[in-house]
Image (cartoon, rainbow, N blue to C red; front, side, top):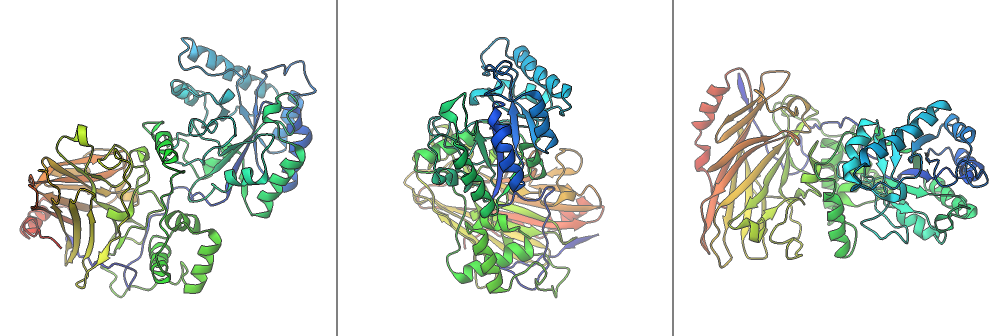
Length: 587
């Protein structure tokens, strides 16, 4: 039985490294999905040869709509479609009749089932596996159809670039796994006859920072639908660009190597609305932060490569740097995964600023779109070199009259804050180290309210203090603070079951490992409530600031520690005796 002692550092030092490897490899930069709609003859006579030449994967979405059965000048035969399958390409379902899905239709379920199953049957007749990818005909979607698509074995479904972009010019946005519903995958581009190489590049160059660019083509050329035709010489130019610039080009089904097809957001429209807000403000969202100086870059690269073990794509998602820039910087600084410092204190725990670029949640990511690293720290496991926990301090601050005002602060995009309602963007802040080694993060809001968190090392845990100074001209009441411990990067603690492994003894909340008598324990005081959020998963001991008049400052105290043993009640009494809840003060 023992409490595990902790040491706190700002940046890499002679301390214990570790990170959790994701279940799937991270999405690499320059990953493109090629899709072709409508069973057109040029898919076989033109596209096939070009793709085979470059070794590219692709999905051909098949329909028997239009005049497929009688017009073999414009449309493929089933024998040609079967040959595409034998060539190694994916055959996807585009409904039997190219039927536009209408979510309000009373017979939606029956008609869509018939449309998909009939096409599936025809695939099987020609030795083609039952399709697991679907393209929405006419790019018209209906959330009412999503359960049926899942029932019929569809893993991924592609839509167009709308509603984020108008249909006419074929613009779109990249697929953001975990945010986009796997059955509502956006097209990064929907090719048009007048597309230039610049239009094509605008689409495929979105394939970075954990995003995939899904491209939608019709005929090459399209002799049946001129408004979506792509000239053959232009298509060759586009494919050569992908080859020359080292893109990986795959079929839609093969995205399952990187993306969980079961990772479905609760609200499929959340990320769409988020993009629309950003586009209305001037452009697609970008959650990267470029280092401020070469020394800043070096520190972050040490953090990400040595300790969090980021891939180049994840480093790019955090820093906004290109793959070539990252490679050059790693060479310049001599940073490699195999040359991190060896710890001279192997029983001590490492605490580092969380770099961003890798989502700290496993699930319910639509409840934390574009998480900010401003408030997040990584606490590495004392038991192995592969796990860490992300502290979000605070994740959110709620206030009086929330329905009218919105939240006072939120460390990601989900519900409205006072500032999103006014279209005010908060400037980023970073954790800073004090001379005594404490980590401090502090922010002043546009209304003059200032809040911050200090995290200090003790021999057996983390002492955390939070303050809120009311620099506004109004009383702040009902100040509830969400403080989160995210468990996703520590697999032995990351089960999503709210069961006996979760111990609630307010202000404490603790979780036991599924494989041993190991516990992570956290608490805040004064405590509003303790709770466990299974989809994320995460632990909460949420504090409550006393009501705060203008000009005054209020405080919270927090604690986090680890314990190994079978006497958790005794350990909680030991922590109580430390009087950690009386240590609050401003920085």
